[in-house]
Length: 241
Image (cartoon, rainbow, N blue to C red; front, side):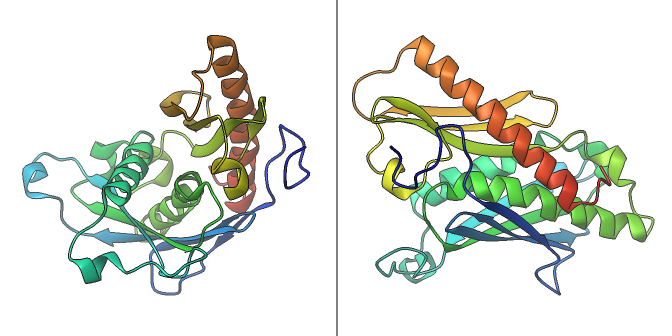
């Protein structure tokens, strides 16, 4: 039995609240159960120096956790003067995931930065950030389209969403919360497009190595969960994509 009493293939309650921030070109407050992440997408009329005069745009991401996103207060990384390796790894993953569904030449020489700030953490912050970050990105492109800067459907090639899976008490389960994540025998994160293409898989055996058969069961769970998340994205965006 899972601590949350959910079925093995059941997501936590998920919500995607668009336009949460009044100032950002696109924003989404995403909730996966008790994990809450604010995603904002900001447009800049410039690209990194190495992309100048290339005709291509860029999408990048930044990620951070508020000091009391967890049970004990964490020191702000800005106070220590550097980001942790975990933070850098997660924000690179978010950026890679979003760029995988963006036609960078169609964006033009502009940069969109998706900031993902964890308000409350209960496992799966990176997967929630990717899922909500896509909605914020889509709304930023809608803002641009309303000003005749781009056509959103030309820039976005597909949806992208992410979910965690793992082996908990010997059973494959979907969307781990913290009590499961902290004790799972195997922990994996899956990032996929709305068409089912795999962007990235991160999988680690915390105890005994997992088998190919177990991996395939986790992959099947991830596909089911991501299909549900993509439908939620479509509903949140009003079927506009």
